[in-house]
Amino acid sequence: MENAKRINCEEALRCLAAYLDKAVSGEDLETLEDHINTCLDCCDKLEFSRKLDVVVKERLRDEPLPEGLEQRIRRALPG
Image (cartoon, rainbow, N blue to C red; front, side, top):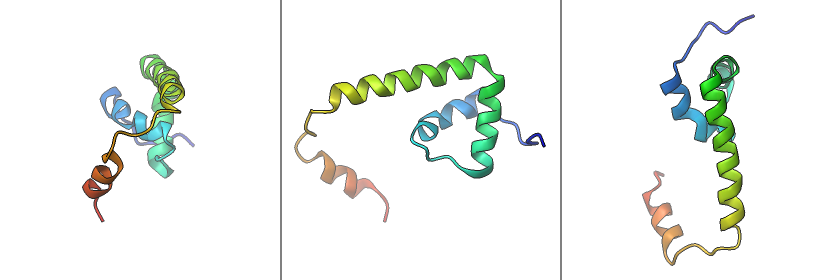
């Protein structure tokens, strides 16, 4: 059965980072994947984002975090 909910490219692109982090699920995941599977432009942007993610992770793998960054991030997070 085809998903009735549709999103546009702008909405899809806002979700790409969460999608790459596997933080999208359920109906939102299905809707996003439906869009990516039918939109060549968003599919290309997803592929570029995947490649960029790999490059950044490889280059920063052995780099320590700047002093105090982790504590500042934790303080900024809710909860």
